Image (cartoon, rainbow, N blue to C red; front, side, top):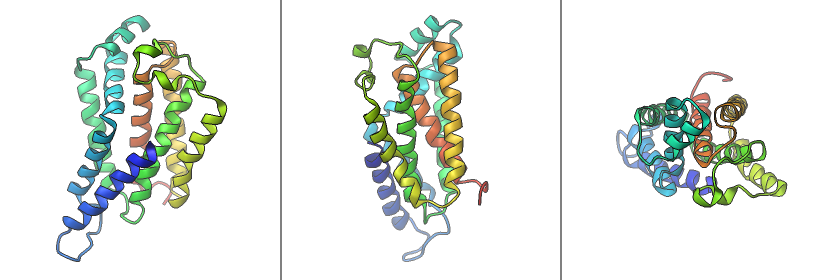
Length: 220
């Protein structure tokens, strides 16, 4: 899934990058804002905003509940709250401006890597935490049962695109692994385990942090 979503976003960005260049035949020095925005929109449309919805629900639950039961109840509410709305706003803004800072030569692979790596890290949390929702009532319920072999396959597909990026990818990889660990500990402490919404939150946070690192001067 990460390969498909990332490749589609990169393809749309490349096409829009050419269409919205400053002048015909000229290559802008960096990513064109509207091209980046279209790439982000494509990813949202292809996934049905599944991960963004999980991120928003997680923000609402962790921000508004005092006990694990209250947090889980809030996360099941289909209505979005203040924490969720602000979280999505900041998430999209960070993602948009981070992608604008990345060199055009490597941006397609960064886009693909962001989607594949973040999904692998997200699904891998199920190997370390209990699933605290009824799988039958969750959109992510089908992912609760997978073997170690499945994890290895996901790791291979998730890490492969990283080899097409320069040394700076090591900074991004280190950062997202740290985010993975922080969310793992936080979910265990605040919820007693993980839910489908939590997996979406981990995916989105890992993706945006990866972009931020690749768009920074760290490791250059």
